[in-house]
Image 1: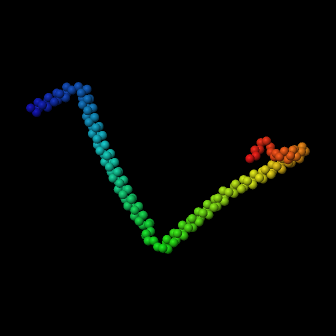
Image 2: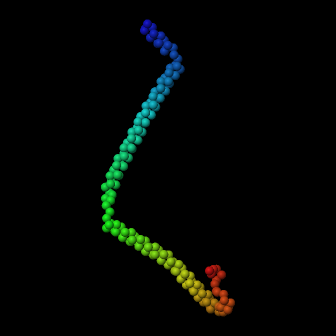
Image 3: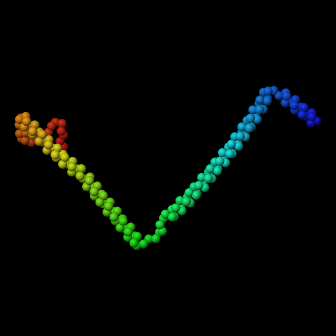
Length: 161
């Protein structure tokens, strides 16, 4: 009987057309590809879990090291009256320095205003001299007219404020 079953199978296989063989071959390939995808996905998940675990361990270790460094750097919390007095003195000096800085800043801010006023006065005086010289060189005697009418002599392009 076994011989008979084998012969039947061989007969069935030989009767399959090439299209059926191709279809069976494609199904096998699809199965292989799906199996590879599943195994690749599992491998990537394992790698991600490993990376996540390692990051967590590293961050915990870093936190421990930073905490130890912080403990080493911080001075003991012993306060004395001498230390308090030094702290007060330091604060007083800081306040005095800030006050001097503010006064200096105010003085520096007021200097440009004074200088501007002086420059404007000098400019007006120079302009006045210039007009007198022009009037004298022309000999028109316009200065008398200006003095009588009470108007000031300014060129038309100069605005007086």
